[in-house]
Length: 156
Length: 416
Image 1: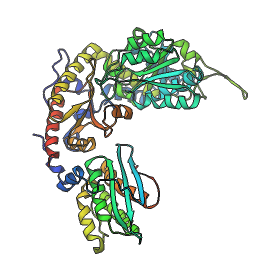
Image 2: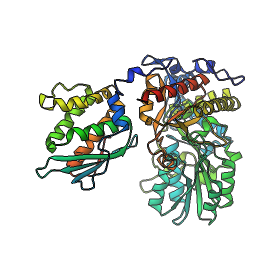
Image 3: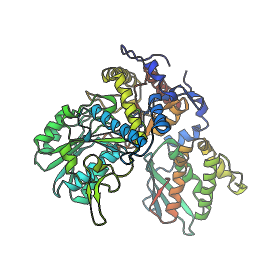
Image 4: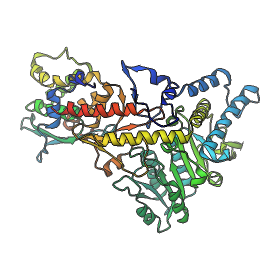
């Protein structure tokens, strides 16, 4: 009898749900910033759009693309948690998320981002799958590229 | 994993004992290795031949006048002879050792393409090529002003032979470079007919035999191939050794791609003259131990024999097609009349990478992605990639059943 139950840590319901029905999955026609993210090894590809508020914060975030459940869910969750943040705060959150994806924990994550990290926690399971970590971090690489004014990001 | 393949006279259980890795557990799971199309596992006979070469008979080749170097040279040249016989040519000078198939195709693209073809000539390849038989021709096109054309692939996954004839019709195609067996679709192409049509149109023909040479008896003389390439590591041999077969006059006409030791006749500070073929195309110390390993691999495959190998693979292929096609939500690419044991498939509710992570968890090794054939995946609307199960001479019907059962369970897993 073949069972995959021990993979529910990696593929939690949240991941499958966001992977299948990604939130903010659309083009922002009036985006102030955008970048493409590409994982050439596996063919994952996305385009991220950011709308900035007059004071420079991320007013809206959306993406389009294709990829595995983990890369789509990660992009979906990211667009939710970065809305309203200053670019620096969003990038700092991305650095903490990469720690979470690589190690499964983030001991240095403070109370100020506790809510965000809780939302992203379902992706922590990838740390046991080295070849899949880049699926989870592609969206955040793309965010950095968009905020830096670059057009392309790669998780390679 | 019972259910050994029921091909008469083929003792797959016995054959599996030759492959040490197949008896090992990988992360606590029995290994179900279905990625032989990427690289095959190695039998003890190959491992031991290479060890013996290094322990007892190793020195550089074609150099020393001492006994050990003569022994090593003899072993290296014996490997060339074995590769020649394996391909059906009596003339070992027609075999050039390369690093792999990729290097062999690049050698033809650079030396024949760059040295013999003229600007305005065309090279004709196809939509179903591995990148190794596409990118070198793109590079040639960009460097030498050579036109690149592509034979279309039908929905069944076969070369469109009418399109092939049409692309040859204006007489500008001087080289046809196509696969003998698709690494994605499993399609075996009609090599003899392809070669005849190329020759009638005034073109030479190269076959990428990376997959075909493993699964089918190849006879370059019967095909009338001008160039034929394959690689050792897919044929149960080591990495780092591949073969370029070329008709002698063609290899002679080609300028060398690399200069250095072993490929020269005489050298002064001003100029050098080239050694005879095949040495001319083998600059530097070659892969001596790997050549010995390839020889052992060829001997191993020959000892089983292609009639038995082909019958076993036919049984596996028919079983796999029946099992995979019967699973709801599974799409198999490639319905060619003549196809072998390579199955690329997609599950309707899971991405290839998610699926391969699941399969890996129960010990099944398949490849996920686009298998170095992005244009072909685009042709079939599978840009996101597929999983690929590819069989070897040690694959069992039971392993195919195990994969099929896992696919059913995986589809259930992803249905929230």
